Image (cartoon, rainbow, N blue to C red; front, side, top):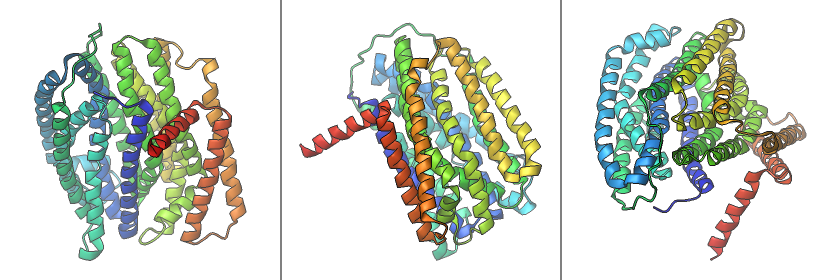
Length: 521
């Protein structure tokens, strides 16, 4: 099959994830405007986060666990063997998920009570209803997680991203009808469930089309350590951390009073939209490259790919984190501060965004390191993951417990930042212990150059804010201020990164030059 370049794949995936980001922004704005940050939105976001975290955890688990063997199967045995393998595995995954979801459906009341101890009786009842609606389609999300991993293994990276836009499109449609028919927020949950069914149908079509293509295996199998049961357990543990950490945050936020979960959700959506798109796009593409290099036992190429993944992620995420930190209050005011979204909710959401901005850098590095770790089947994954996430979760719980009475909802993102930084350090320690230094001293300059360029961008944003003055109270003025500051910061960042010779700037210029030449031709 014809394959595209790595950076081209990243750009393609990022484009479609950006479309999803736009839909998420529309959904957040509509919910904030129509329902505000209160008891109903707390219940909805609680149920939505429970199920979406489980679905995202399955997606990550299948991506990390299944892409390497699927790459090997596709490259050495061809589409027929891959098709036979999938017919069996898809039904196994769906039925196993259905059994687990049926049990969660029966015990939904106890689950909500355990994970939202601060909810009132009415909130618990509403959250339980939304939870059951979304839980009914979670087995389909499990099956599409495996289907998406297969498409990624075949380097059809954008197809899973496009398919996963459908539930958001359905949610947007439902929110558009709320003012007309006076629907409650429960209609959004029903629309997401319906969209998940449609998404599963599109995944089935894309997978059938991909496997119908004919290609000849071109690579000879090389000796490789097989995927063991221990590695599967390590993967399950890692997803337990992702889901468990989010549930801890929700439980703590529920104790901070009305609007705690809603403002945390709004802040996380706003913070993770653009940088999260880049991070996930880089990880999706480079994880396949990690697996391919290790399958050929090419450790030098593996180490180079890890460096490239870190640089590609941080190149985009670092300036975005700076901009979010500097512009948190005007950004929240302009996007959310209208309709039913009260001033106190604006201030609370902006404070959370300020804490979450530096966490973007940690998550960007952590995503690349985790992918590199799971791509290598030789590592003692259970020991690494068990010790690392135990330490990280213990720190998260302890800090929340200590800081919550004093700082309220802001304790939740602060504890998350410290916890994830610790986890990042532990994973990096295990990788360098196995592979040696991933980044040698003479290779650190591009990362330092990006930090310098980001500092220059921060100065430019501050100068633009100062020049605009304090009279930009209206929404239009705030939007113009944000646009001006972002433009100034972005131009300064690109100029500084180019002058300091960050490799990604040259690669992007080359791609743009090729695109212009193709367009002219």
